[in-house]
Amino acid sequence: MPGVIAPRTVAMARDLLAGPGGAAGVADHGFAFPLLLRSPGYHTGRNFILVQDASDLGEAATGLPGDDLLVIAYLDARGDDGNARKYRVMMIGGQIYPLHLAISRNWKVHYFTSDMAEKPDHRAEESRFLTDMPAVLGDKAMAALQRISEVIGLDYAGVDFALAPNGDLLLFEANATMVIAVPDSHERWAYRRAAIRRIIDAVVSMIMQKSTAPPRIRR
Image (tube, rainbow, N blue to C red; front, side, top):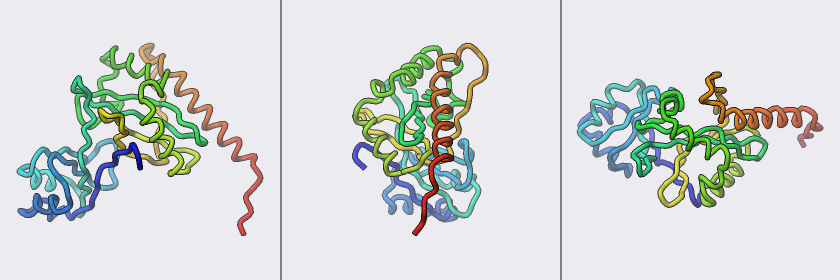
C-alpha cells in the first residue's frame, strides 16, 4: 500500500529460534538484527521483546512462552530527539479521529508506561496532534490512513503507527479491538478530553444509526 510500511512478520518454531540454527533461520526469512520476538496471544507488551543481535537470539527465544514465536521486523519509530512515538487514531463510521500520541524513551511504547505524565513538552506535542492532526502527520500519512480505513472497511477500528522521516506511515497494528481509555481527573489531561469526547460521541452516533437502519436482505 503506497505510503505504508508494515513490518515483515513470520511465525517460527521457538525451538528452532532457540537453537544453534536460529540466526541462520531468521536470515533465510529475510530478517536482519535488531528484530522483535513476540509470543502470540499476549497483549499490552507482555512477552514481546527486542533482540539486538544474533548472539542474543537463543536466550531471548528460550525465555518466551509458546511453541511458535512471531519474528517481526523492527521499525525504528525514534525521532531526532531519540524518543519513540506511537500515534493512535480511531476510525468510526468511515471518519478518522486522533485519540492519543505516546512518547517514550523505550522502543515499546504504551501510553500507560510512557513519559507523558512527567513531560509537559510531550503533552504539548500531543495536544498539537489532537488539535490539528493533518498538520502534524502531513498529507502522505493522512492519505495512507484513509487507504487503511477503506481497506479495513469496519465501522469501528483503530490504528497504531509512527512516522518515518520521509512521511511514510510505520504501521504497528490496525484492528477492531482498540480501547478508548478515558484519562483520570488530573488537570494535566484536560487537553485530551475534547478529542476523546468526539470519538465517544461518534461511536454512539454510529451505533444509533445502525440500530435504526432498515435490515439488509440477504439473497
